[in-house]
Structure formats: C-alpha cells, structure tokens
Amino acid sequence: MPLCGFNQKMLEGLVAFQEGLVEHGLYERSRETGQTYEQRLEEEMSDMDRFSLEMDSIQNPEMRDITRGLLMFARAFYKLARKNGLDNYQQTTQTVNDYFVKMDRKFYGELQGKPEDMKRLVEHLNEVHV
Image (cartoon, rainbow, N blue to C red; front, side):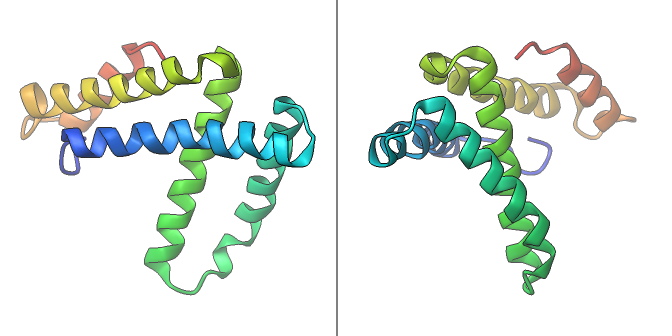
C-alpha cells in the first residue's frame, strides 16, 4: 500500500479479520440469536450505521480514526460478501487480499516516486476487478 507495503503477517491478519467477521459476526451470532444469516447481517449493518453516527464523539482523534477505519472496512467487507454470496466468504477474503497485493506491487514496483504516482495507482485500481 502506498503507506508502508504489505507483508505476509499483515495479509494473514486481514484474512483472519475478514473470516472472523463472517464466522463469528454472522454464523456464530445467528446461532446464538436464532436469526438467519441474512437477518444477522442486516442487524450488524444497522448497528454499524447507528454507531457511525456517534463516532465523532470519540474524544481521542487517533482512536476515532482507527475505529472509523475498522468500521468502514467491516461494513464494506459485509457488502462484498453479501454480493458474492455469504457461502463464498473465503473467496471474497482472497479477492480483497489480492486487491491489496496488486495495489502494493503496482505502487512499489512501478509508481513510487514518479509524477502523479497516486493518480496512476487509482487508475490501476479501477481496472482491478473485485
């Protein structure tokens, strides 16, 4: 990523987080609550939407940004997982990680330090199919 790059440990952490969103956040919690996966997903999305409205009240600016970023990532992953089919969540996880690897390789392998490197990176990312 044009911030620091990705290594294997970081990618494994993303896999664990994304898989945990579905396995724990949807599958385990739906069993606990007697909801369908889709009902659980709707409730999770609603909770995240309501929480996002309150986030500006988090006083520590760094923790507010970290919390906001994590919520945005989780919400976007749930949307992708739903779009691709919840049963395919592991493939969706791999697709998301592949996206980050492609971003990383393009930036550090080709664009870093060149004029309009970020603009060209975004153009490249718009061609990556997720």
